[in-house]
Length: 97
Image (cartoon, rainbow, N blue to C red; front, side, top):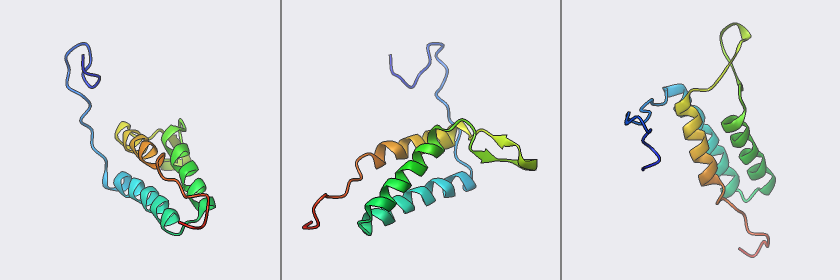
């Protein structure tokens, strides 16, 4: 059985990102790539940690009236996808490269 389909035969989740959520994921990606381009190991580790916290913290966004809200399933999916992609972002240990 394919992992995307549920046992009941229903379609996979088709929820999409809102414009604000897409911008948020893009900001995280840009921060990762800027640190990589600058060869700044500390900034890269910090950016990776921020993505991990955003992807896996239970309630990180503050909604209306200061109440914490859980991120949408689409945002979580996009952030988790970004965590897999960022796992490959490594800087060389020696300055020769």
